[in-house]
Image (cartoon, rainbow, N blue to C red; front, side, top):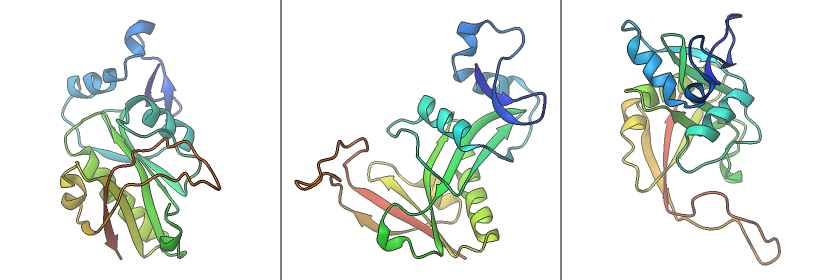
Length: 186
């Protein structure tokens, strides 16, 4: 299975004709299909949360799927889904003012410029829906080139910590390292 455009036009899971199952299970197939096609530009497409989460589960370096979202977007190249952005309410309750959204996951297959393309698309979609602020957190070890290329600016740094407390033990499933907060406003 590979994430691709189905005959109905919907983006989702499908089998590419001519490929055996073991080859199709390799999601790097999407990069090969895109690179073998005639040069095309990236396109924004709607993606369901289920399909975006599947993409994240298969390719994201340090995060798992999310529980909810406001919307999800995909980047398509030559009919193949090469990246997703999942946008939802801010995780930090102090940022959840009703006017702010957060890119909670962004994941690509490594295609050049796909990250900044998706950050720009998420910004345009959020502002078109009436939101005034859009943020995202990057690990301190990440350089932030993609968000800066999309016109975002770093507005703060957050110390890494656990969500677990003595009164409510939790298992940390996220990186507990320092992070940088990037933001763009309408």
